Structures are given as C-alpha cells and as structure tokens.
Image 1 (cartoon, rainbow, N blue to C red):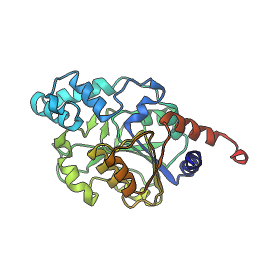
Image 2: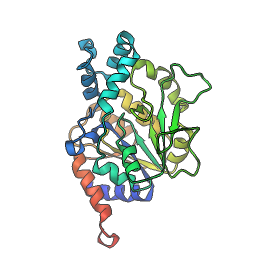
Image 3: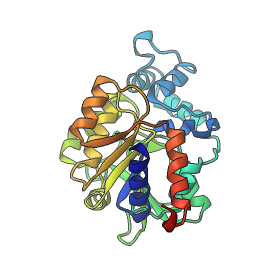
Image 4: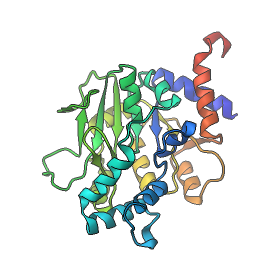
Length: 283
C-alpha cells in the first residue's frame, strides 16, 4: 500500500499535479548537513550560544523572542547566520526536485538547499520569502521576491515556471527571518484571511495537492502555516511520516485529509527517485 501511494506521489510530482512541501527534517537526509533539523534542535542550538530561561529552552519562537528582547535582534540574526550561513550540499531529494520543473515548492525552513539545487542545475525560478513586519509600512508587501541570482525583484513574473515559497524566510539572499513571537503577531492575525500568502501561491495551489516531506505537525505554528498554505488547494495531499504520531498530529492529518505514508524519509526518497528513473513500461 505504501509503495503504491509513493508511485502515485512520484507521478503527481513529475506531472506538476502535486507540489513539494519541505520541512526541516529533510536536513537529516544523508546526515551530512549538520544544520538544526527541527524547531527543538534549532532552539537548543540557539540556547547553546546565548542561554535562555530553562522553561523556554526548547520552544524556538519563545527562545528567539527572549534573545530579541534581552540581547537585541542583531544577536538573534547573527546566530542564525552562523548556523545556516556556511555553504551546504543539497541532498539527493533537493536535486531530484530541482529537475522536475514543478510550479510551486513550499519550503518552511531557513536553509537554502532547495534554491542551491535549482541554481546548481541552472533552473529558472523565483523565490518569495516572508519578512517581518517591524520597520515596514502597511503599504509594503508581506514578503520579498528574488530571482535565481538573489537579486530582489518587484514580484513574481506570470510566466515563471517554478516559484519557491519560503514563508518563514531564509538565511540568503537577505537574511529574512520570521522566528520570534513578535515576528508572527501580525502574520498570525492576518493569515486566516490569507493576506500574508502571496497571490502567486494562491493562484497556483488551486490546481494541485501537496506532498509533505521532512515535516512534523507536533507544533502549533507548523500546523497553522501548513493549514493556511494548503487551504483551497485541489488535493490530494500526502505526508511521509514514520512511526508514532502525537495526538495533535493525528488530528491534523485527519482534519486536512492528508494521507500518511508510514515510511522513513530515507526509504521514501529512495523509492520516489527510483520510480521516476525506471522506464514507463516497467512501472
């Protein structure tokens, strides 16, 4: 059953009917990146540089807020640049996805591996990153667009093949980060009416479903963003998650009608890539 679902996923991704929704656990693929691969891991990495109160040490958003409030925003940004700034090698999944030419890729972590993989292959794409509202006027958008070379552009061209949507920002090209509680105040106030979601994402999702890879839903922030991003999309949706689910994860998958594939990420990625490499007559 799981392999049959993976074949359906692979075919949907290759045809552009499904869009990848990438989470932090992808960084554990091949075990080579050394980057924090979950909100808890990032919170602990931050705490290892600037000690925060123990009660919030594992809560990323609160730990980031404490540093921002007590040590200044620049200290928080410096830590994120130290953690995510060093050049990394894209995983086999990032490289495979880069060659598919899918219309939309959602990537909810702060690394640049997906953009790096597309740049490596010479793929044309535009990246839209969420930005913090502090210091912005209300006439300014909720994010910024960048071309494949990292140059800021006015928006997403209508004829652009691939849109890489980074709702929480990324370390490059401009160190845009949504991470502290205060960063999310206005975003979470408005996201239910979709204002922070860029129009090109809203337009493209209407004809596709999503494949969650490297994502867990044991955190309210992750569930909130996932729900709002896939809202009013065509479906179907799949999530590769191995092992036991938390109660909130199980409820979320059920509520969003997401089909779970109970395989390890490594095994699922190997099967996805292998299936697309086989001749059509052999599938």
